[in-house]
View 1: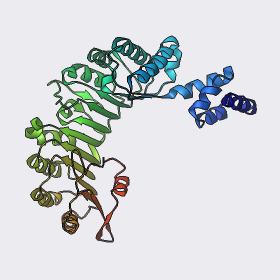
View 2: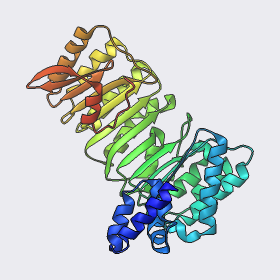
View 3: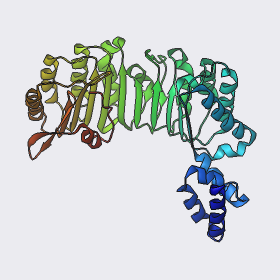
View 4: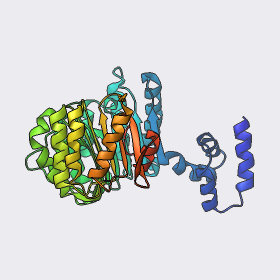
Length: 369
């Protein structure tokens, strides 16, 4: 009731303002106020609806609330298809409703087919069953899509390739294959001229034809060890200068060193480099110095671990290692490993918070050191 009275007072005050200013005010209002204003009059309904529907995020850890939210939103779109044109961003992060999976998946897919003006799409894997995922990849088309965060099983490679090939507007893609390796078709050549960020399997890189890559985050599997140079050379042909390179390695010391050697040989202008492995032994930490001599523009270096925090008790030893890295690579300004961050100030290395290191690296890294 209080909200309704306030909304009516606002409507009276704003009645004489131009629509452009009203929309600006609505955009900066709380979602609940926007929803209430949309019921005050036809004018406010017409102005509020596009704002309310522009960014849609359905997220829940529980099946019942998730199912209710999905049915409410999707039914509203299906019954009023004109509303779909207002949706620019759609994010769905919900658990699978095994009892009503056909109904929910059918509603989601029908809604996606209407939201033709999406520029951002993010769907958690369990939100759709395998058949519906295939249908989405095979049949949905978003002519303005810029960023997508989707799941694709290795057996769904052809539909995934077709989906990406239809969306040359993409600038950012994040493909989740679970823990399995994705190998593209031999003949695959997906043209993504606008692609700036890729996050997914290293093994899928050969399928992508791009020239504007700025950031790449690769997940490596043991089977990829024999093709390290192949993938790194492929990336070097796609990149823009000062590429931010991130790699997750699921094996031990040898692939770690092989990876670093390949990057230093083929992408020496890398600006920001993060490599995370299951283990990094002392010998590897010191062997890295040799590779660092090859880099010509490296500014930030992070060496981390998969799945947890580790901190060396020997802070003095870490400082000696960092100083050695700085001497080997004069362009280096920040370094992070053993859950400690260091930066170069007036030619000297000093410790500082890891959180500040993340700010300097544009928040690109995950704090799993």
